[in-house]
Each structure stands twice: as structure tokens, then as C-alpha cells.
Length: 79
Image (cartoon, rainbow, N blue to C red; front, side, top):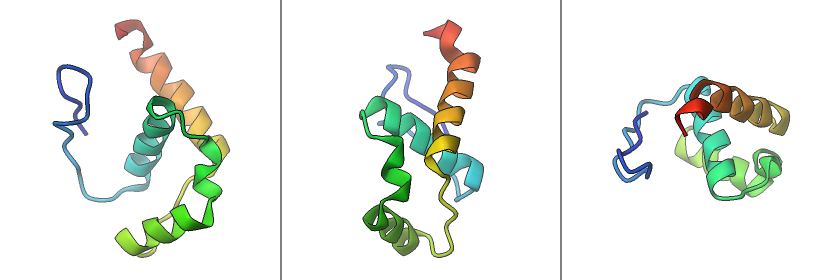
């Protein structure tokens, strides 16, 4: 994925589905939109994901939290 030069997602490049990609995007969305990581356990959210990509594996909230920490370690010094 690519984020626009102004830090927005308006020029986001959407790749084909991958578990790593959905983990990263969900972690970043939870952080930037102030969504709780427990969103991943929400049945409506799970149904939406299944509708968009049947068979989708959705990471658990702990994984999302750890992913966000890992993303910060990699890009935190660039912020």
C-alpha cells in the first residue's frame, strides 16, 4: 500500500487481499480513526469483511495492537 505524500489515504494503492495487508490496514485504521481494536471481534464487521472477501481471516485485537506497535517502531522516527 502507498499513502499520499500529505499522509492521507486518498492516493492509497489497494493490493489484492492478503492477511498481512489486512492486519496492517486495520491497525492503521484503528489508530487514525480512534476505533477500538475490538472492532475485529464485532460480528457486523466480520460479516462485512466476509461479504467483501469470502473466507477472510480477520486478526484478533491483540494482533492489531502488536502490529501497530511494530509499525510505529519502523516508521516512528519519520513522524
